[in-house]
Amino acid sequence: MRSKGKTLSLQTTFKGGNRLQGIYFQLDVLDDINLVSLTGSFADSGVVYVHLRSGAIGDQVGGDWTLVKHTPISSGGQHLLPIGIVLTRGSYTLHVACSSSIIYSDADCTGEVLAQDDSLVIYNGWGTSDCEFIPPDRDYSGCPCRSWNGIIEYRCEVESVYRDLHLRRLAAAMHSDVEFSDVEIHSGDQRFPAHRLVLAAASPVFASMLKTDMSEARTGKILIEDVSPEVVAKALRFIYTGEVADDVDIASLGFAHKYDITGMMQPVSSKILKNLSPENVSATVRSLRPYKRSHAEADSETGLSQLNARVRQRVLKDPKLMEACLDGL
Image 1: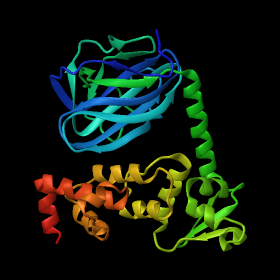
Image 2 (image 1 turned 60 degrees about the horizontal axis):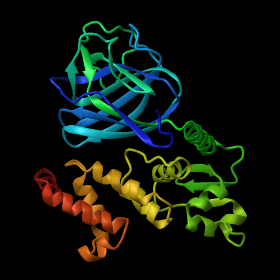
Image 3 (image 1 turned 90 degrees about the horizontal axis):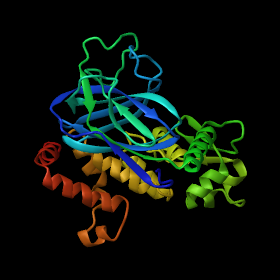
Image 4 (image 1 turned 90 degrees about the vertical axis):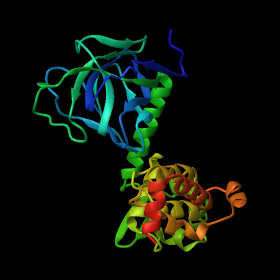
């Protein structure tokens, strides 16, 4: 019996035994769900890609794939990947891959049920060397039959599913709207149409600017000169949709701090810390240097100073990051 409103999970196996870059497998959705996350097993650090298309796995790889997740992982083992998409009743084909490789198990038949409950059925699939790109015009010739090792978390409260879908569609429509926008943000040589109510709700700083006695309110223009248009675009994406771009950096965090954008500081900080690598650690440390605080102060704060403390701790514990920092001096 389904528990509406609760996050449920369906696990296959983690017995391992084989590896390759990716796997195609079929997922049957028996009732509308919100796909909350996937947990997979990975051989090493790399970049994980999760693609999805409608329809059974069939004999052809097929087209119309949607990339629903693209994220780096810093080590092998099991990793949870937040997804957050609505799937209505029907059959879907998933492609889960990693630039290093994923761990899965040998299987005998792709039509065999691997795991099932009242809402989902997971089938055995095909192992593949396909990773970030999916070739649409070929079959599964040469692909070994494999069992995906993982967990699917989902919610089956129908009202919640459709509410989330409605809000996502509404946010996307507003984000792309030009006809009904009533304010414009100027940054560099770019212009970003926006909506006063949305900006004011997301940021008390924007709310103050847009009061009737301010120039921004009179002209309908907000001039932002201290960051690039790319940073402004990423901030607007978060304001409208709650999504954080994969390539956010300290400039985005500084923008969120300056304009006090509700809820943006923490996810941006987490993504910066997650993306920390020998290639970018020196630049990150230099950018955060003005926000250095004592440990006691950093523990009581949020945002830039706290991220500075977390980055320093990470560097001190990771010899590769420490070496890259020293090389960048």
